[in-house]
Image (cartoon, rainbow, N blue to C red; front, side):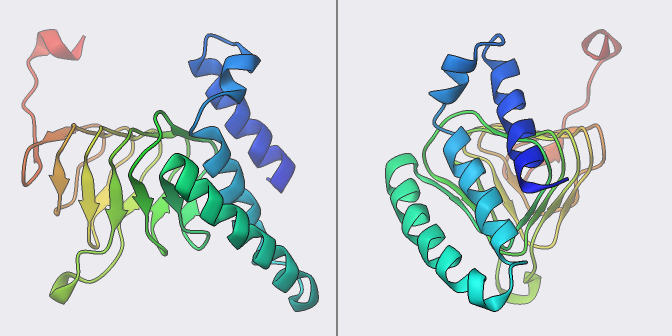
Length: 180
């Protein structure tokens, strides 16, 4: 998918969460850091002569966007299309992280390296929801359709379709009534 197609898909994802209202989606704080990420990520593929001035302008815009919205999406992260950032503030995605398609991130989330012997970056599957204040650290894999609860600290792999909560994050046992 090209740059314009990716950005259009991100916008549609935001608009769907705003009851189909384009005007409300355009005022969403999370939309602009995502669109800027798409430009910076795509700029890496440009020839050197074009890449340098585009990345210079990108970095100026990135600094202003991080100050205004509190969202830092490293251009070298691999982020699927579309991505939803529900609220602005204190969101950090480190270089080298991988995030799948149709993921949703709430405020106060850190996705990055753990350090020490656990060096490495997280890989997050498709359709994952990361709750407010959650931390996903180190070389862990979060399976597709998983849910990471608010303020959870993920340092171990998360099975697909599961919900994890706590510090450290552990799967929640669901009853048959909760599954329906």
